[in-house]
Length: 467
Image (tube, rainbow, N blue to C red; front, side, top):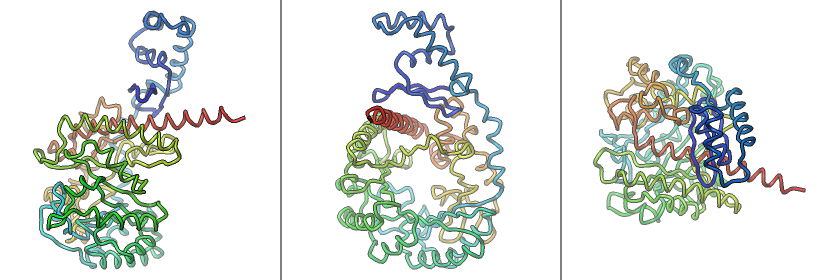
């Protein structure tokens, strides 16, 4: 499967199954579009007519171009057949029942009252609760016991607002460190926080123990304060931004992410991304809202079109800033075209429900944080392990080839079939699709690849200018 598009002056050809990306001129772009459906003579005739006013386009050049394209085909870099479909169902089976990561919901409560919160202000459609040390300790023991030969284990402290249970977070980190040497493990911790309770002690501890910190900020003050409010209805922007700036500076501007959400109120979210950049934050993520159908925060059809334009605008602005020596990182544009991800990840996805699980304050296991509170999706608990193996097998079978709607999608090996939770909430099935999310994902990948093409072009131009 081949996908072709033009963005920011680049003619890009993506070969889905080989992962090959080709940046070509306009003539080669048109020739590739005709290659599979026309003979060489027909293609030459069509393009000679189309480019009749171009003296540089002649029959010899077109036939040479055709030979180059055919050489790429024969080398397995263009029009590559799909050989993964038959393997897709076996990848997750190879990992057995290994668990490598947990999302610990240490606080099912929050000190903010964000109207669009998918977690119902931290309650997850249930009761407010804090995880006890005993439950958290058992969760860590469960992870170690079910991690097989894996050395690196990941634990996310999540909520609600995890800093509302900060003493337990610190105790759990201390306990985990005592288990590393005896079991040959290495814990990597992430903390996600709204920032309201950050102080010097939190910063010092996070810098020692947290491999990553995710900070919630929705961008411009007026946007952030309209939705991220406390229970008195007051915005939180002025209280958290100075704390975020202090924490990020203390971490040397690394190992963090500013994570925002855009809604119907700000489909022009690039202004929010750039606002955060101008505050000094360079590691940025902005996510479309996840909410129930009919929610006033939800993105409309018109919003989706605006957002796609915004993704292009952001990519161009990022390119401009990089050339000016003030680059920013946008999470969804991070793309490694040389080192990964591997075929397993490209097909199987995040591992929710199999390698990755969420743990509630009561010790119940769910496929991920977005399924918490959905009783039909409870996998088991941290004392007895997975007691609903049928559900786990359902998630194990979920991959880029398990969803009929993904069959003809050129981006399926980039999204691995998409988010199971978004699919479930949009269609009622983890094998469905969230079509609006698919549209946005495809646009993000196009922008990310364009940025890589521009980076390569800049490097080549720099090399050519050197004496």
